[in-house]
Amino acid sequence: MEGHQNLLDNLAELHAHIGSSIAPHVYWHIANSEGYKLPKRDYHEFVNHIVLSKDRKMTLKEYLDDIYHPILDKLSSGTLALEKAVYESLGGAYRSNSIKLYELRGNPMKHNKEGEVDLDHAIMAMLRGMERALLEYPKLRAGLIFCLDRQFSYEQNEIIVEKAIKYRHRGVIAIDFSNYNKKGFHFKDYVKLVEKARENGLNVTAHSGETDDTNDMWECIETINPDRIGHGIKAAYDKKLMAELARRGTFLEVCPLSNLLTKAVKDDKEMHFILNTLYDSGVKFSINTDWPETLENGHLRQQYEYVLEKKMLTPEQVKQTIGWGFEASFIPMKEKESNLYL
Ligand SMILES: [Zn+2]
Image 1 (spheres, rainbow, N blue to C red):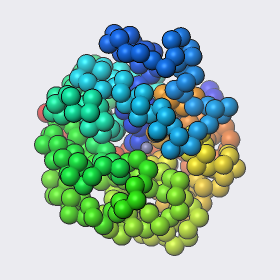
Image 2 (image 1 turned 60 degrees about the horizontal axis):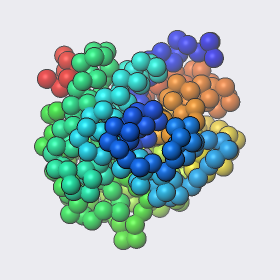
Image 3 (image 1 turned 45 degrees about the vertical axis):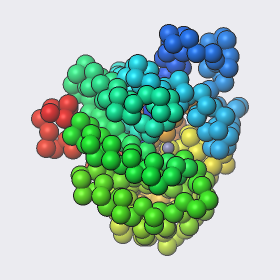
């Protein structure tokens, strides 16, 4: 893809989770440093076990329940692992993927060894990892998004919002809603909490419209009205919703390979249809990874190359979506001299 070198020299990643942004060799190093027993004793078998590929697809629920939460979240828990994980993920993205802006997201309560580690220590470890990377790569901009969890109680999610507010001047830029739905979860119950986050300078994004129908997306925009939506691809099948997203200027963080390898999208043809339908309807979006290290060929640059190679978007459209990504970023670049939130 020599021809697209320049086009892909300046990328923004808006949707990547901590647990799946850690390269397998970094996981291997953490596991062996701390003496964890792994499901596979050989490195290459371990990689095959945690990485999805065209030949090894899993549904979102299967992957989250069998691999993401029990293995990846566990290994990236605790202060030493978290600092290393965030530091390595950001540095790696800048060095090998030309990523100049990286919004990394995670739920600190999923990385505190189920309460064994003090939550503030876990968060500070994440921030230390980010600061080390930002010091080493002064042209890199980064911020952390704290994920609330649809499976959590309101009280647990409230604590995450409080922590996000507490650390907003240290580089926590937004809150997110993640995980698959729990019966009884409704965005309307979170209106006040989201309002509080906003009043305190945080931005809002939410996973929605990934695997379900568009009812969840409608409820999401009509109640908490997020600045951005993670995925949101199902909107392509709802003309009224696309018009409403365009009217509100709600931005979609589209993650093509993640959707394909978790069977949320059937094939390249369907992805082609989705991207073009969104584009033609005036819904702004950018390409993101979701899980850059646990999808085969899943790095951001590779995903843009893939979209170009399969002619899902023209080079001109790709250029436009990259630009939209920078515009939709939650990182307050304009007011800041330094990339260190000083
Ligand atoms: Zn996601």
